Image 1 (spheres, helix red, strand yellow):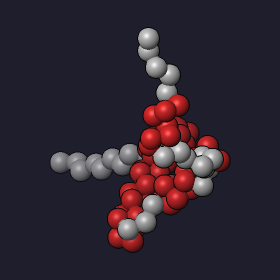
Image 2: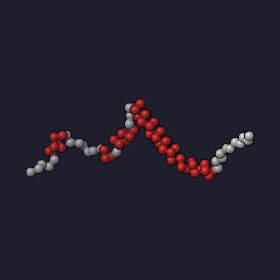
Image 3: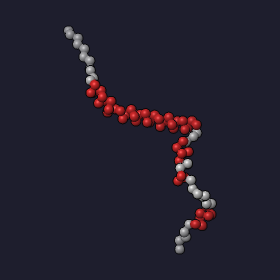
Image 4: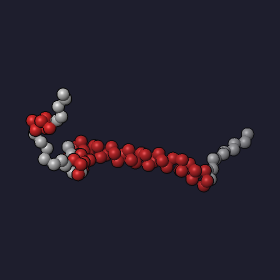
Amino acid sequence: MSTETTTDVIDADTLSSWIERHDDVVVAERVAGAVGAGLAFSAATNTCAVGAAMSKMPWNRGAQDPEAHVALTRLPRNG
């Protein structure tokens, strides 16, 4: 009875092609982890960096907003 053992040898080309195919998965996992960590931090500290940044954007800074009755008088009337 002969006992032969075989080992699978992975050459460099096979390994590099496997890494190239799975590199996107690693990047996606890291991005998902970073987003999850940011959401957990926001929940734990009751802050929202994106909301704070958006509130400081120029299109969110209106000139003096009119009161409700002033805005209603400025609407065009039908008929």
